[in-house]
Length: 185
Image 1 (spheres, rainbow, N blue to C red):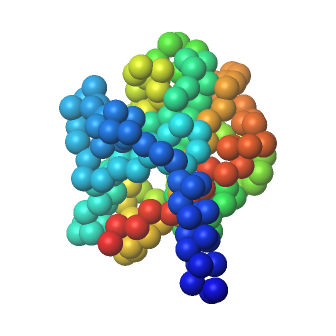
Image 2 (image 1 turned 120 degrees about the vertical axis):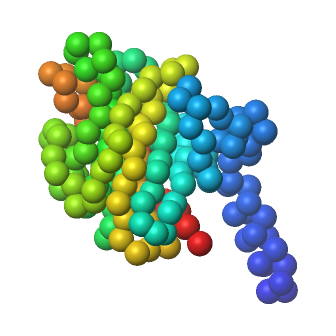
């Protein structure tokens, strides 16, 4: 009887996994920069994907975070070194600046109502840039990481930017579920 319970539990858990065809999988995506990555994952919420290449020595993580977004919205992706939650996240933000260009910068999420203005991060960030291609915002960056095999991820989208600052995202549904972990081992 306990064996059938575990089979049922496994089937229930599998039914919640998103179904992907080869056409909408992150592995078939081609970047306009022609950059390629060693790994990728279609994230479970907000129609987003993360592509990465991890180099244990010298301890760098090259990423491209993509999320569907309208031109006047914003996207963010980050690592929380402490927990799988928003507060404490070292985030990378991207949006279309009022001058028409795509911009990206780092910001530390220190509350549930962050200012989302540029700020210093605890992780070194290199080669940070943003792009808008085929109704997706993309953040490219190289991060310096501590010696780790797994990190907590947080990602988000919002539909409003005012005075060149992202405004509050929705606080329901998928916006509250956009956390996870990735393992490099």
